[in-house]
Length: 257
Image (cartoon, rainbow, N blue to C red):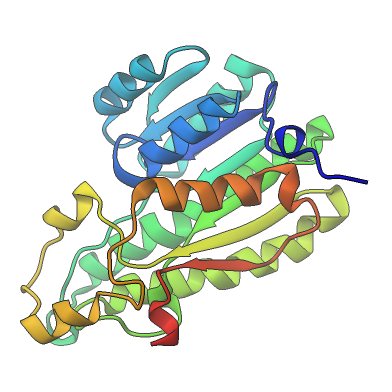
């Protein structure tokens, strides 16, 4: 028996929500899913930018302004997607923030904002999407974007970010166990140093040269958004039909260095 790769990666008739889809890795993910035939909801705090990407993708791609720190906004996103496309098959929790602040400068507002978007928002999106999948009898897939920072400190000033992403890894495993009886799979992708527009807008003290040098993994270069999108597409597709509760680290070998 041979594997039909075209069938395994064929997402025609599937509906996908990608959060943080206006640029960078999220945009690459939205384009990858559309290329595989899926109908895509691009969710982002920047609704206009997401709408521009959706128009460029064309076909069954639409956008919605979504604040991942707002429960009401996330509930509205899932409801609108179900109404627009009639189903939800795949959820990709990609939206996140990576501001930088040293421990002694970490106030509660900064800490809470990071965890509200990076961790609580992931939980809320999963809660709402799973409710729809269960009601419809959909054997869906969820892919959460964590980070290799969840396993090893990558740089000073990323404590809140790393903590939030470690939470995403744990949340992924717990959710996978809960929803497995429904045929819903939940996995995570942990990118390493990846070239995205968001890297240039992170706030906080600049990294010294010796820290920047540590960002370069054994493969000798930063990752590309399309490479992270490929990992996400794999976990969301039938090619990963027997994989759940797992964490795929896509960091150029950084954690083996």
